[in-house]
Length: 242
Image (cartoon, rainbow, N blue to C red; front, side, top):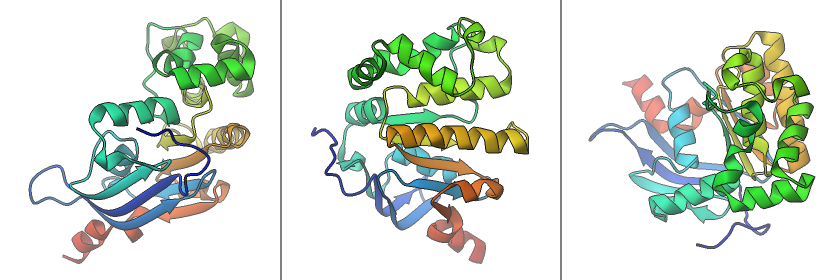
């Protein structure tokens, strides 16, 4: 498998995607979707419209029954699971809705975790800051997590603090693509805006492409482009018309 490099034309390219979890079911039917390198994209739509399923396709967790999903020039649809796992570990930073921090690890160890599974991200972190721990500390500081919190377990933090730790974990090692799946759903409006601003500032520093999913359209102004999944998903339109 070739390594993504600066020459890839699109950060994400979806062509003729068709997917359903069961026979005869169609949750996604997307003819085309293109996201450019370093672009900030806000993807929105109501619950159940296929947002998380599409992110699972872009992350290589799921593969379409038909069509093609390419990330950083790599055709995930044509890869075996191990190849998709490697692309995800090396090149994607993911912020989950429930954060998925490891409860028995310290804050710093949670942030360093991706570098245990990706030599590429480990080398980038060390190149940036000397050690992976120093890189984690810098990101945590920039995201508002001070020294006294870093040795604590994630379960000892507030929801807002856990969210920032999850963001630092996604950002460590400068992955080319950041995927955020409803990461602000448990925060009030002011904290949502603050978090999005911090996240995008860090992504700008790393030249990362961003796909941010939310049902809160008030956040759309922070992004280069807002996409209503219902507008590009023919399965959703056909369901509404039935």
